Image (cartoon, rainbow, N blue to C red; front, side, top):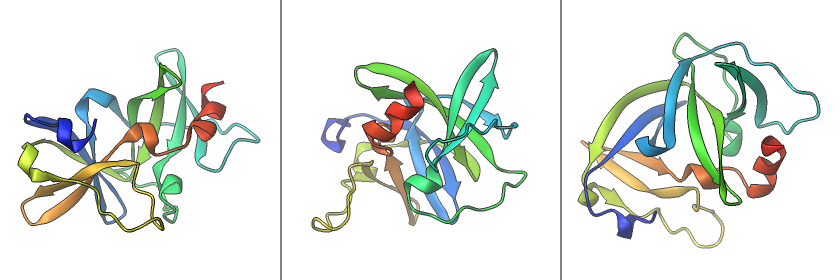
Length: 158
């Protein structure tokens, strides 16, 4: 989905990582969970925090902060796991994404969404669908399928 294909109002789940506000298309979100114990799996990449038991299913949990080269912070009472569906090699996988805090579900009109910034070849922005403008602040609308590379998520898929 590029911003050119957004022609109607869409709903987004907003959440925080540190001071930054991000958004996910609600169509990608299955549910939001309170932080639950995560079982660490040895010899996994740094961004892979482990797995959780979600109603009898094993769900890998990734740390979005690692994907954005942000410092790791301590878990708080507001920390949560956003369970999302990601397209990988033609199939849908379910993963949990750690977030510092979920804010709300918002509606954005197409004119409230701008393309990601173009900063030459130095900064990759393929993980962004666009920049949403709400009141006087911007929020980054994630392309969750692109936050981690196919190689990185291939390790999670197995």
